[in-house]
Each structure stands twice: as C-alpha cells, then as structure tokens.
Length: 235
Ligand SMILES: NC(=O)c1ccc[n+]([C@@H]2O[C@H](COP(=O)([O-])OP(=O)(O)OC[C@H]3O[C@@H](n4cnc5c(N)ncnc54)[C@H](OP(=O)(O)O)[C@@H]3O)[C@@H](O)[C@H]2O)c1
Image 1 (cartoon, helix red, strand yellow):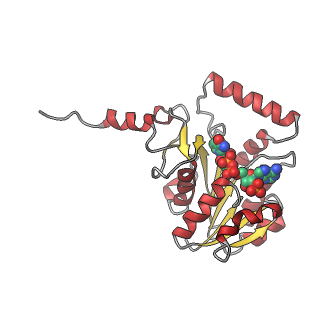
Image 2 (tube, protein in one colour):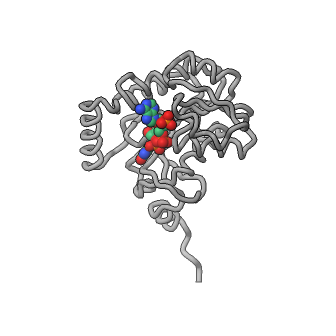
Image 3 (tube, protein in one colour):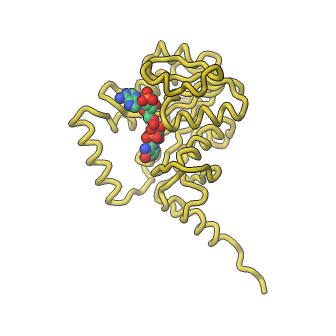
C-alpha cells in the first residue's frame, strides 16, 4: 500500500484515518467539502487535499487517481443521494485492483441475518422518518449505497461501526459477521479505533467482501467472551 485516498477526510473519523495512514508512511489524498478544508490545517504539507462534494464523480475521479487504497466515510447527509452517489463514484473511478474500505453503522445488513433489538429498530425508524421530514439526511440512501457496494466485484470491505466514543486508542477492534453475535453486545468502540480498523483493512485480504460489525477490544462483551474461552486453571 503506497497511496491512499480518504473520502470525508475532514470529519472526526476521517482525521483519525489520515493520522493512521501518515503513521504508516502512506501518501495521502483527502477529499472534503470546500468549507471544511481548514479542518485539515494540521496536516498541511503532509497530505494533498481535493476540495469538493464527495458525490461529484469529477472530484472523485481526480482524487482516486493512482491510489491503491480508498477509505470512504459514507454519510447520508442532505437529500441528494450523498451516500449512494459517493459509493457509485468510487466504484466507477477507483482502480479495479484498489482496496476499497467503506464506513457505515450496524443498521446496514448484508445478508439479512443480523438481529436487532426492538429499541434499536424503533430508534432507527424514528431517525429515518425525522431526518427525511426535515430533509436533513436520507438514512435509506446509505442502505442503497451499501447495496451497490455489495453487488460490485471490486475489492471492497464495508466496516459497520457500533456506537462510538472518544478517548485514547485501546487497540484494534474485534469484529463479527452478525449484529446478534454476543461478542458485540457492548455496542461501543472508540472512534480512533474504528479508524484504525478501516486503515488495517486496507492490507487485510481476509476482509475482502466482508461486512464486519466491530466493537472495542476492551469492551465488556469482548472481555466476557475471552474469559469464557480461557481454559480453567489446573490445580
Ligand atoms: N456517530 C455514530 O455514533 C456512528 C455510529 C456507527 C457508525 N458511524 C459511521 O461512522 C462514520 C463517521 O460518522 P461520524 O458520526 O463519526 O461523523 P464524522 O466522522 O464526523 O463524519 C461526518 C462526515 O460527514 C460530512 N458532513 C457533515 N455534514 C455534511 C453535510 N451537510 N453534507 C455533506 N457532508 C457532510 C463531514 O464533512 P465535513 O467535515 O465537510 O463537515 C464528515 O466527512 C459514518 O460512516 C457513520 O455511518 C457513526
């Protein structure tokens, strides 16, 4: 991995990904909205910034040129198919052999085998309705974006984030295929570690065509799972 494009670089997740990529010595190209370029000031001189809407194919074509990895923060803001437009532009313009890693939340399901609590479903329904009513966001469009990614032959990974918190890194999150899996029950990951998982996925071919649901490696459900698997001490 030499050159990585980060689409949505100015956001919280994006800035952590920029830092992880620079720590690995990757050449970084960041895409963000024109008005958000100042948010990347601390990286000035160390990354190239391509300003523009992430669902603009011309912006994406320019940004992903010669990149062997593309990290995409999929967000459903506005009512202009921002997520699906971004996903389509990346799928169309990234090199066919590039590693593509997209972010989203647990609400995305790849095979329909995820099981959600009643409260999660109710919350999602409310947020989807509320966001559509006030034309703030199209949650359904993030679903459509992932449908297009899952249907593509590109070398993709869709990383499904749990609830997020700020704080020092705890290490690489643990993942599982389905949201109902007990190991994920804590539903909490440090944002810096979500970014770490995205960046590590670039070079982890076992994650190609996977949609890992992640959780913090120090979260109670992960620790409980590890304790259950530990052999009982012999006396
Ligand atoms: N927040 C959570 O609890 C949570 C939980 C699970 C998964 N996730 C996933 O994590 C990823 C990052 O989400 P985040 O909540 O942590 O936010 P974030 O990293 O701060 O990213 C927000 C992104 O949305 C862009 N944005 C904000 N308002 C916009 C607008 N009106 N039009 C276009 N773009 C706009 C931001 O760009 P600017 O810098 O230009 O504003 C930024 O790139 C997403 O894929 C999300 O689905 C989040």
